[in-house]
Amino acid sequence: MTKFSAAVAAVALLPARAAALSLGTSSSRADVSTGAQTMLRASSGGLVEPLKADQKLLVCNAYPGDSPITALLNGQDLFGSGGAKGSIAFKECRYVQSAVQRQDRLDFDLRDAEVQGTFEVGDLPTGDAVLLLVLEKRADSPMLSFQSFAFPS
Image (spheres, rainbow, N blue to C red):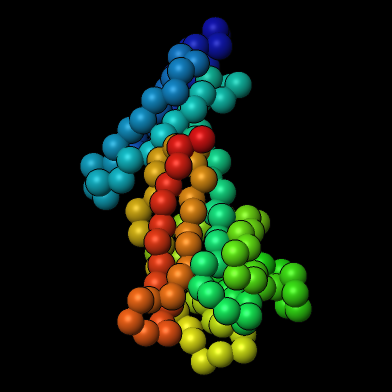
């Protein structure tokens, strides 16, 4: 049995929605039942596996003041194990080690002030990108405001 025939036989055993065959190129497929689009990449075995985008989240503190910002991602410390490493100061940016997903919740808190804010992740790009999230002070109040950007990489 040739490599191509073996791959076709293996695909025949998979559910129709999970089966896909590639000849070594990247492609995309749409899941009709959910409307979701998945990027696919050929594996060494000839079957296709989902393409994982390399997305890095960069958080920048543009909230003026001496109080650093701490953050939680879905209830877990976003920047580290507390202390100075667990917060970012005014005019500082830090890459986040955790990957973010659609509908993730990021809760921010000014450590020495009673100012808090929540950012919920919406749609994410399908390809590689740097995701920039800037925290800033609203012009008319001490509340947090957010700006988010996606830069292809």
